[in-house]
Image 1 (tube, rainbow, N blue to C red):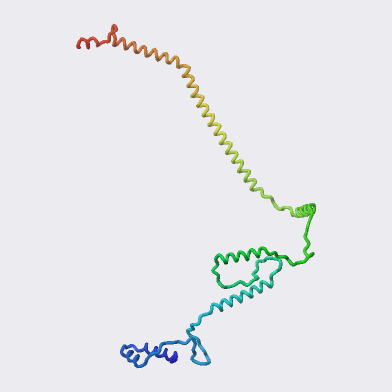
Image 2 (tube, rainbow, N blue to C red):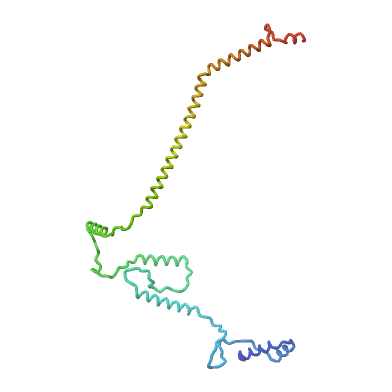
Length: 246
């Protein structure tokens, strides 16, 4: 049974809505499983492809990529120059994936070491590029000539920054001068106060003997008056009455 017939039967079955009719129809007409071919056509002259299950080969993609890489390497080899390492890719590299690891790392290190050991000699030939060697005198002469040919600087010389810096430092020095004067005045004020205190202390020390003498005389006078008030004939007043009461 063709795929078109099977598809037609399934569409007819979906059109039947009642369950008894569907059961009777299913019993009368057994349905074949739907199997769509990968390629079929309604007419032989116009083939049409539906539901292709064939996947694109990864190997074919890799081969195409590798072919492009080989063409690129051939082009790089055609424009390469002997004797100079320009960093061009001149060897075909594999497009397969590698897991890496210790062995792969060691292999790359060995390849790099061998590449560094090899010496590239430029196949140019002799006499084509003579070395330019100059003596010390010739070098000095050429340098002097080069410096002499330098054009002198033309145009106006900028003095705005110099003027600004001159005024700036003038203001700075003026401020420093004022601050210095303030510090000197503060110093003299402090010294004058210190001198005044010292003079007062020295004056007190000079007159302290007379002051002490006056204080001692005053204390003696106070004690004498106290004795006259409370002592009579060598006996304290009020002591006799206390003795008689006892």
